[in-house]
Image (cartoon, rainbow, N blue to C red):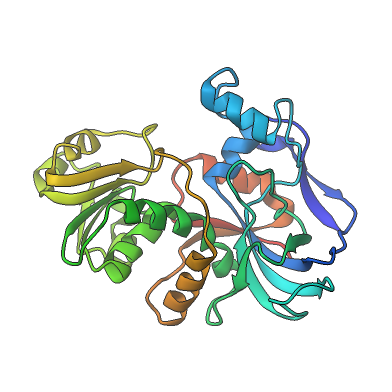
Length: 313
């Protein structure tokens, strides 16, 4: 089978398309023919080992994934595809089932979605894919959704409260805007650049602030919860000022504040929301598997809208 292999850390060019052995499912595993995957910010961090190796976070990252190069050289954390075969003990799936999900679990080395096939345990984070969207759209769901849901739940949002999403046009931000609006019932303000205003409005934001506007800070209100969906590596005058725009009991959380565990119930919830028209996967662009290097370059620009997906088969 074809797969993208990463044998050492470095720029996108370290990724190589190679022929590797097709896996066979064990008794408790399903063999998935992958139709689509996505390039996440985490994929790029891992490929480039972007954390300093001697820092506490870099050291922990090295222990989990390897110091000199990835122990599991086929990266990729999200997928959508079809079950091709099942082991004797599998009960949740059968051949022909269309599925989507995530391979990521904290403190475990489990990637593998940059390939034509992948074996996953029956109890892994895979579920029936939403029936009304494509494989590419399905692959665009798991990464941003799990992160957005985790941090929004930490905000303990109540219906009608005011929520500010800084970085509302990325994979986490586009998910957070929709979840805050349609799942939590909040009054949502999205922060993005001029080019992404229409997109953020179309996702359900009640208000949009252009952080490049010289008068952007004058549009701030008081918020019960603020989600920094881009992380502390990016800042602006508006972002700095927004940290002072909380209500007395308000909370502000960054996506840098911990690594949440993915949950199967999140996949099931999102399937229902997508099929009910309450959530729209956002795709910036799609590349074939052979152009994985270009896809990683695009993600690293930091200017993608939503998700960058990869068509595998």
